[in-house]
Length: 97
Image (cartoon, rainbow, N blue to C red):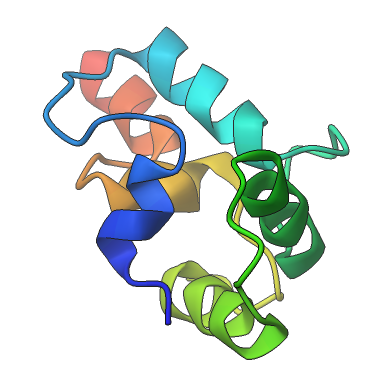
């Protein structure tokens, strides 16, 4: 079973402080087909690239379900930001005005 920590550490160490550019770069490591969304298929490919061959479809669907705020079967960048406890980008932009 893949837990939250394994999901994040597949591409970066948890104790790193991420700025916006680094977070976007991490997101793109999972968005392997460059659609600006992370799907179960994207996760499978990203984990395989990291040498994690033992993940299964059910585990990946659970990851998506846990973080898919919009309930559309995929994770966009704003939802990805929330994994790290960050506000969605639209809210950040509104706060800056």
